[in-house]
Structures are given as C-alpha cells and as structure tokens.
Length: 123
Ligand code: SF4
Ligand code: SF4
Image (tube, rainbow, N blue to C red):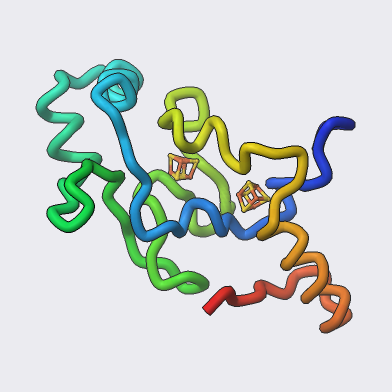
C-alpha cells in the first residue's frame, strides 16, 4: 500500500482477478507474447478466449478454491499475479481510484469475523 491508496493487494485474496471476463487488447496479447517469448498467435491461443456474448477477447481462467475460477496467471497459493510486469491494461488501471471497494468489503468482513485471514465471498 502506498500513501496514496487505502488498499493493500498483498493482503487481499485477489477479487479483481476473479472477474468473469478480463478483457485484453491486441497490445496486451503482444506484451504477454513478448514476456513469454512466444509469437502473437501462440500467446493469443494459449492465454485468451473469445467471449461470443460480449464480443471481446479475455484472459483464460483456471479453477480456484475461493472464487470458483480466477485468471490463469493468478498464483492460487500465493494469491498474486505471476505476470505483473506484463499484465494487461485492465489490470494496471484497476481499481481506478485511491480506494478499492473489494478491499473495504474484505476489511469490514474480517473485522466482523475477528479473523485477519477470512476470505469473504461476494456471491
Ligand atoms: S480486489 Fe482490490 S485490493 Fe484486492 S487485489 Fe484487486 S485491486 Fe488489490
Ligand atoms: S493478469 Fe495478473 S493482475 Fe491481471 S487478472 Fe491475471 S492475475 Fe490478475
């Protein structure tokens, strides 16, 4: 947490990485391809899926004990991003504010439960 923000991602189980659709642009895929030293097509196929309903491309997921599923780049044990330097723009900007609603919710629930490790569910 910096002095400018009121949330601490290191103390959060990663709600934002469990979004059903984490949209990626061509630039995001190119960045991931470079990070993994892959060609664009391979990175697109390996890391993303086209969402027919939303008509956009998003990051692939893998199963998660806490949230059902999370981004494939999320380390489920350490609860952190494994491609931080190469993460998509959508992840870089989030939560687009000095505070994070998920973090506030988590702090509230942990206080209520008197348990600093409690993983509150959003649904
Ligand atoms: S939900 Fe908020 S506090 Fe948690 S990892 Fe995402 S940005 Fe950080
Ligand atoms: S790329 Fe990293 S920050 Fe973005 S959703 Fe995946 S694990 Fe989270």
